[in-house]
Length: 282
Image (tube, rainbow, N blue to C red; front, side, top):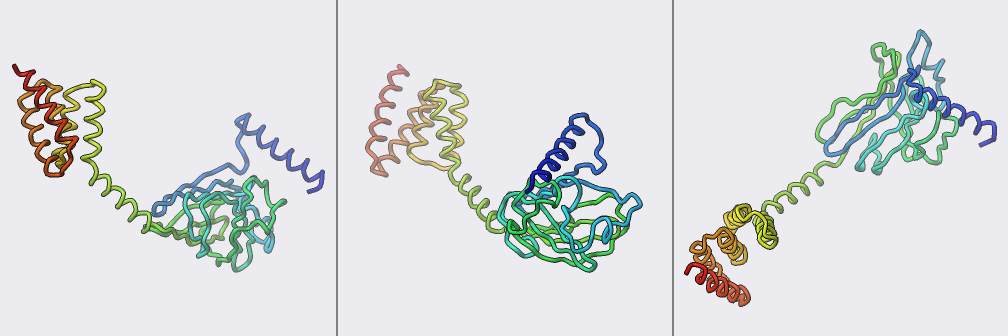
């Protein structure tokens, strides 16, 4: 890049910054559109030039020339998961969107450089994907517009329109595999919820926090699934609430299950608790 071009780009960026700092309206205002497709979040940030009684494609925007696809800073698109963009796999990330408008079709490019001001510094070697899509005749669109349409579980269309010309770019995302994984994770949480409740009860007991809350958590744990160790926690929660009769009864059950599991430490700790609580009842 020569020195004059660098100075020009710097001046343009500074001018835009000054305008924004002064809260003055831009001739081509910034816009952002976001859409979730499947489990993928997609957002597009762009600027919206107006027709303003001008001839657009083939004149203001020449055919066969790289266009920033909007005004001011090049349009940027962001995916938080991998996607298929017009059938081509694109990794999660942010990319600038450049196009080459034609009479019958547009060439669309996603480029890894996202801080370009216009197409002057566009470098085709940094394109991630390139493809063409046919143009569509659309009702007059005064301000350049980007939006999403035909959104389903794992697919949708990214659409662009300006003047009386538009294009549609198909998007696909993998939602099945992450959805199945989410289901498995939630089922795993449910299957181990008794452990979560037991840990909560133990925490309250170990730290002398609300005895009633500890008993509530301990009951929920045992109600979900009985193990000798969470029944022991329940017995200790009864004791913390002064119900030694119920504590002893529950400890006896924990001791029996620990014996069946051949787990001596819990047999012994239950016997010690029972002995201690019997003394408390005298």
